[in-house]
Image (cartoon, rainbow, N blue to C red; front, side, top):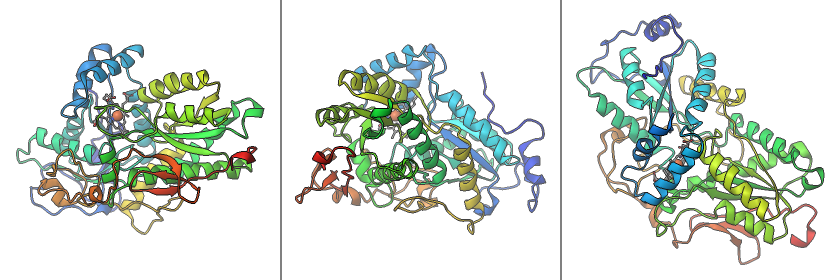
Amino acid sequence: MRQSSAGTRGPAAAERVARRPGRGPVERGERTAGAGRPGEAEIDAVLLVTFGGPDEPADVLPFLRNVTRGRGVPEERIAQVAEHYHQLGGRSPINDQSRELLAALRDELAPLPVYWGNRNWRPYLRDALAEMRADGVRLAACFIPSVFSTYSGCRQYRENLAEALDELGAAGEPAPAFVKLRVFFNHPGFLEPMADRVQAALETLPADRRDGAHLVFVAHSVPRWQAVESGPAGGAYERQLLAASRTVARLLAERRGREQPWDVAYCSRSGSPRVPWLEPDVGDCLERLAAEGAESVVIVPIGFVSDHMEVIQDLDREALARAGKLGLTAARAGTVGADPRFVQMIVELVEERRDPSRPRRALGELGSFPDVCPLDCCGSPATEDRRPAMAGLPEDALGRGRYRRGAAERGGPATAGGPGHSEDGRRVWRTGILDEELPDARPGRPDRR
Ligand SMILES: CC1=C(CCC(=O)O)c2cc3nc(cc4[nH]c(cc5[nH]c(cc1n2)c(C)c5CCC(=O)O)c(CCC(=O)O)c4C)C(CCC(=O)O)=C3C
Ligand SMILES: [Fe+2]
């Protein structure tokens, strides 16, 4: 079944765009190759770029082949993950969740058309691009719902866009240009709804288990090299995760009038066991907390925006079960999904690109992320040669040159990261590139301070 990704029904997108004030009609074929790139004020479409998932049992294996092609994921892991999808009836919830976000975005952004394409399943990015080209889109703003900067969450999607354009074939047709909206890990439109969800999860715990409950912020694990190379200067993945977690903990403390102790952990490790990935795994983190005397935890999937398969499998099925076995009272906080504040955030990210005088909201210490990824941003040390990537600098689209790999050189010892203690006894998060102080507040447990 062909799934249409065009905007609201009725007049063609080009006509709708033409009705907007200050814009001339956009006609198919108007722009020839090499014509001037439109400025960001002329963004005339939004493209929602998502991961994708199987819709029915027959999709599961071909989908997994798409995801893992060239990525060195062992066959046993693929079989195991296939089983996870089959336990959900062979259908991932992710496409429906993307459709819900898409519908909300179309409501808010109209008359700007919103298209949708997946990296790994139908509707594919190339289908969306074909439609955009037919509609005469000139400059699309891409929203990628990955919370943090890293190869898997940023450059890989940008490479997929380049591949999709390539598959379409130039054939003399003008193709749209792309910009990527900035990462939103510290935007209030993401963090405020997250804080609400943590509070709601906390309130499901028995009253006497709330004040001491430990928050465990969870993001997708990635190979250590990805974390080292992430962002413009390296180390962005963990730095952003820590900053976002700290801000949610602070927002929650403002609401409740007291601080919760918190930690960060990772889920969904795959790949060869010989390759170091970010640690600790959420299960190991729960074990440590139980051993340290914690009684209750709230698991916060801060690295995900919807309750998709990995959240259900790794957090609801595995982590909550592990917590139960360890005698911990546990709840899992929800994801932002299509929360109106999150949808409004996306609208705001589009507006700030069309009008640079608009405020760029961000909470916490890191500030708003640059609009355009520098050449070595979220590099892929799996290959030293740059692959073509769209929605970045024009040089990136050419795919020429090699990564500097500067961050890898600064990477320090190849330890897996994790909480530890500095020489003066502070609790710190160590990864070889980060040495961040962690909060040690354990309300009601002065013995542990
Ligand atoms: C950072 C990150 C995000 C968050 C950012 C973002 O959202 O983009 C994310 C999201 C997701 N990952 C997903 C699914 C999978 N990820 C896999 C494999 C991998 N993910 C990785 C990283 C990430 N993944 C990595 C480093 C691998 C190893 C292979 C490789 O280097 O590429 C595999 C293969 C089997 C396995 O290895 O587990 C599957 C099936 C789904 C869809 C869930 C559904 O269907 O509901 C979603 C949203
Ligand atoms: Fe993944």
